[in-house]
Length: 300
Image 1: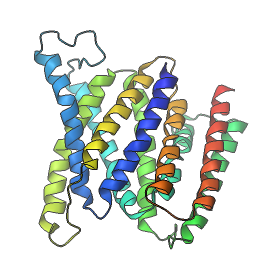
Image 2 (image 1 turned 180 degrees about the vertical axis):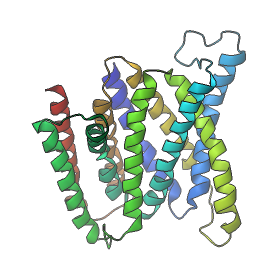
Image 3 (image 1 turned 90 degrees about the vertical axis):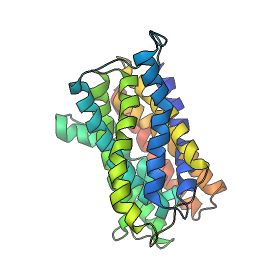
Image 4 (image 1 turned 45 degrees about the horizontal axis):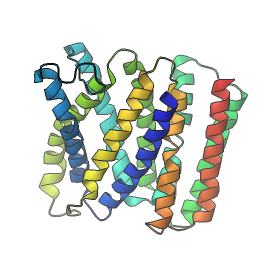
């Protein structure tokens, strides 16, 4: 069941990236990010209120948000900061780079999770896993070649660094998620981390964007901003419940979720008419083959 949830999450994430790219086009980044956190929190606010004051209306359902103490909420606040850090970097990078570049870079997150587990937890990689890591590195080098054809220098383009940092913090978030899911209810984590992100974003918006709003890219409302939140909330809901299964594996779930790059890549080609698709498709294929080797390494 957790594998099906992971595949569902991957599909929804692909559409999330598409709506995010559309919303950020010629638009102010921080207001879009703030509205994403706001709408996502509004999705879960009714579940929080019904769980607390609904006289058992949601008891026993997957939508029930259990009460928790300050220690649990402290863990969730840490989660909020990690995710928001990844989003800030990711949103700025997404705005300034083609979706067909961003997607394959984000797809290397499972490799980062694996390397992180090796460095932090002392895990050892087997032959299959090393092949997967090397293929991911090779795809990144080839992607930099494809980027040069569009005037993107991977060594000196700050937006590439932003996407890489977003992927790194996203990998940290993935490792932390598995830790949380062994201790906390999935609905508790998802609902409250969205709520806390709104409070974190308020001072960021007021201090960094509001004073300079007239001298920077103006904010334009688009309905795709709402769809960002809806598809992300649905994707995360499936993701957290996948991780809540005792036999679930974060490495496998993380790899499957990065399969969302197939959806975003197709839309980057068909909807946004991005360039150099043939060479980027080869880079993407290397990433996907690398993910297969990581899976084989996990099963062996």
